Amino acid sequence: MKKIQTEKISRGTQNCPVCGTRISESATRCLVCGTALDGGASVKKESPIDSKRIPEVKVSLGALIGLGVLFLALVGVVIFMVINQNRAGTPAALATEEPTQTLTPTMTLSPTNTPTLQPEPTWTPLPDLDYVVKANETCTDIAAQFQVSVQSIILANNLGTDCLLSEGRALKIPQPTLTPSPVPTATPEAIGVAADICTNTVSIVVSSSDTLQGIALNYNVSMKDIQDFNKLTDTIVRQGQTLIIPLCDRLPTPGPTLTPTPLPPYPAPNLLLPRSGASFSATDEGVTLQWAAVAALRTNEVYRVKVQDLTSVEEKILVAYVTDTKYILPSTFRPTDGNPHIIQWSVTVARQINQDNENPIYEEAGATSAFRVFSWIGTGTQPTTSP
Image 1 (cartoon, rainbow, N blue to C red):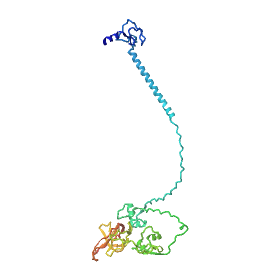
Image 2 (image 1 turned 180 degrees about the vertical axis):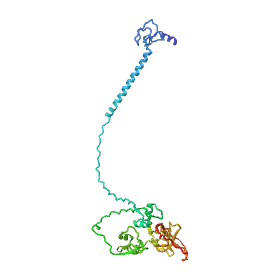
Image 3 (image 1 turned 90 degrees about the vertical axis):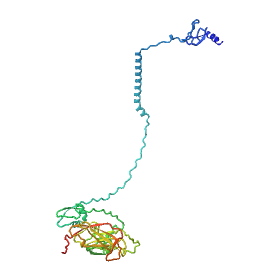
Image 4 (image 1 turned 135 degrees about the vertical axis):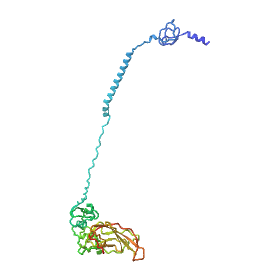
């Protein structure tokens, strides 16, 4: 039944030959596209659109290539114009868009007064003096003449430790470098008032065994006061020299001290005289060695003094035990070859450990002092030996 009905429906309709719309078989015009229909014409279902109505366009290969080249040229021209427009417009645009900055004036500080520092005085070392050695002159004589040490002459002229000189030899004598003294400050009391001059004085003549330290201790006057009153540049005094002792500058008599006495082992003694580098001539019969006391020594304790001639051909050492704080080096220890010898000495505290005073045995009871050296010129005569 269904098949039969479908066939009936299909016979009563037709398709528009233009748009393919299904219309009644008896219709004379398409309701969709308005195409006039022929009632007796047959409908072709396979080709609803008439292909003859679509125009055909035919283009040759050469024309197609020309069109492509023209299109590419137009694209290149457009890109070139866009790039040039961007280059030309960028600085102007930036200049237009950037806002104008208004600079704020800065405050200028007025300079302050800076105090001008006074330059401290500088001292230029004095040049060496030229000197020609005379007949029979030694380094000690030249050192005493120019108030310098023998060691400084040896170092300045690259001499040996014996400091041998020949007549006519040219030497360089170093001059001591001055130390600037502080600028004195005026005080209300000192202005217009003359310093008091000490009138209570005593005049002495220095002997061969005297030292400035010993003289100061003897008269209870400080070494500095004696130096200032006699205008001495150092602490060296020589035999036959006249000194004026200002007694008005005497130190007060020391009372009992509350400082506890150090117990052994004792500290190293502080050596006083002669100063390191001092020189002694052949006329000096003896050299006085002085040091500061370390404490009140016990009955079985003494100071051990060790003296050694460093430039002697043979080993020459002297060891002495004393209870005083000074020792006079005898003339027997003086060199005999006429050349300056370097003498080294030191001091330490020793303690007797046996009961035999005729042949005492000592051991060290404290630290040894620092070593000091001085030069001593011999007599130039060899000691005579008995046959």
